[in-house]
Amino acid sequence: MNAPSGNSAATARRAKFKRILALVVLGAVLAVLGGVAISAQDKYMLKVPNGIAFSECRGYEDWTVVSISEDHGLIAAIVANPETIEAYRAGVPGNGKAFPDGSKMAKIHWNPIKMEKFPAATVPGIQHDVDFMVKDSKRFADSGGWGWAAFEYDAATDTFRPGTMADKPPQGNNAKCGFACHTIVKGQDYVFTGYSKR
Image 1: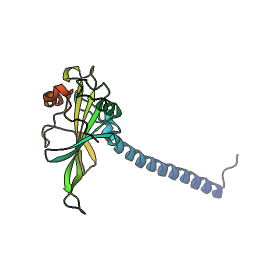
Image 2 (image 1 turned 45 degrees about the horizontal axis):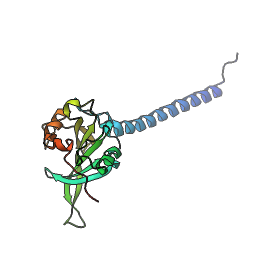
Image 3 (image 1 turned 60 degrees about the vertical axis):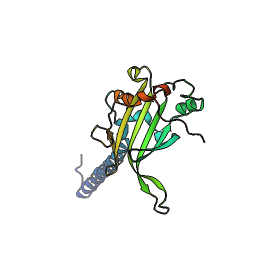
Image 4 (image 1 turned 90 degrees about the vertical axis):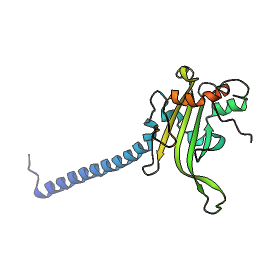
């Protein structure tokens, strides 16, 4: 066997170096893309104790608006998944019937701001939190069939975290806590918000 000449050995080293460099660059690109994907998915890994996971309400940003409200100095949009909207349109809860299992609602809160071009109008500013209700009569049998969750939003990090009693307003975070607040509307299947006429 012939020993590689100096020229071909140098060529082989350069080729090996280029392959290693290409792998390092590819690894760095994949790490960056993977990091972006992971940070975008972080909220879907959140879950409240004895309650629901953020992932159970995936896509809530595109659900139908039930109504708009203002409470605790925040602007809120109450939205619902198609099953809930169908039940509302059929007269639930005003007709004495309950929402079906699989019904989901979200209440998205924003800090209010004055519209720059038209200061007489108050519009949503930075998101404050999002609250979820999920109907599952077996899983949440001891809380009227509903599970509740509150997730606080941190604009500085663009992340959510489960709400706590230290938040303003205080956010208890399990089915029992949501149930305690909603018992005054037991006759409406524990749902405060009616479907606004359009």
